Image 1 (cartoon, rainbow, N blue to C red):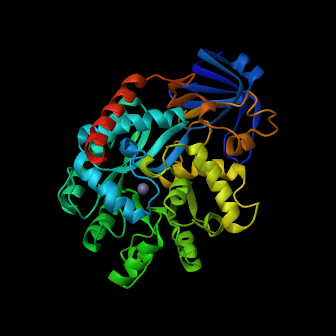
Image 2 (cartoon, protein in one colour):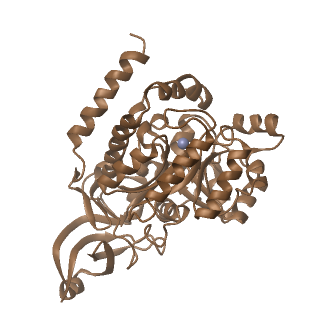
Image 3 (cartoon, rainbow, N blue to C red):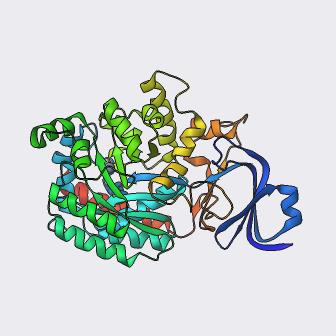
Length: 442
Ligand SMILES: [Zn+2]
C-alpha cells in the first residue's frame, strides 16, 4: 500500500486529454499537490492508503477552469454602467470611475471578491490585467489560487503609474518578486493598440524576449478600433503589431472579433493565442470572434470572462456554453465547437496560452492537482448519458461542490476555506455605498 495525501473517488473523471474521454467509477490519487494516478476505484482501494478520501458519487471531476482574461478587481464596478457600447462605456463611465476610486485597497478588496466568485464557479487559475497588480498578486497568493498577473502598460496616468516607463519599471520589479512563486506567474499586459504607442510596444517586445514572458493585450475588440487605427496609423491594429514583431506565440490577443481571412491565417501561422470572451462581446455588441475558422487555421483559442463590469459575472461555465453556441451560429454549422472542445478551451487551451500546459489544464499524472468536482445529481442534470454534455450545456455554478489548487482544497461543499465570505461581501457593500453615494445621481 502506498501512502498518499488524498484519494478522490468520482462517478466520472474527465481528464480533457485526450479530448472527449470519460472514465467511470474511477479514482484520482493526489500526493504533495500532484496527480499520481487515475485508476478504477477497486484497484485504488488495493493500491493506496490516503490521509483523506473524498467521495463524489454523483460528480464529474474535471481540471480546474482557466479564466484566460479578466480584470479581477473591476468586480467592484459590477453593474455600475450597463447597456452601452465599448467606447461610451469606457470614456463616460469606467475610466472616470477608475480615476476616482482605484487604489491599492480597491484592488485588494475587488480581487478578493473576484477570487471568491471564481473559486465558487470552478475557476482555479485566472489571467488578470489591471492597475496595482501587486495587490491582486498578494491576494491571490494568500488565497492559494493560481494566477497570471498582467503587468499593465497604458499611455495615460493612473494612481498606479504616471507613464509607460513607470508602468514597465514597476511591472518588471513585480515580475522579479514572483519569479520563484509556485502559483503566481506574470505577463506583460499592454492594454490595447489604441492606448499604447509604438515606443512602449517596442520595449515590451524586447522585454518579453529578454525575460521570456507572454504578452496579454486586447486586440481587434471592435470595428471602431480598427477604423481608428486605419486613420491614425494607416494600417489595421494586427498589422501594426506584426510590424513591431508582436504577433508570435507570446501574444495572447483578447477578443479578436474583427478578422479578415488573411488575419485568421496569419494568427494560425504565427502560433499566437486568442482569448475569446463571448459574453463580454455580446454585451458590448463588439462583434463575433470567428472561433471555428481560427481553430481550423491552427490557432489556440482559450476562454475568458473579461471583467465583471462588462459581463457581469466571472462564470466560466457560461462562457463555455456561449462559446459553443456562438461558434455554431457564426459558422452556421451545429457541428462547430462541440462540447468536449468547449471544455478543452476552458481548461487546457487556457493553460497553453499561459505557457502552463505542462503544469495544469488536464488530468495527467505528474500535473498539479488543480481540480473541480461538479455535482451532476438532481432534476436539473439527470439523466446523464455523457457528463461532458451536461457540463457544456446544462449545469450552472451551483453544481461546483469542491475545488482544489495544487492539492489544497479551497472550496469544500461550496464553502471557501481560505477566504472569509462574510468579510468579502461586507467590503464589497462598503465600496458600493461609497461609489453610489458620490457618482450616481440621487
Ligand atoms: Zn478586458
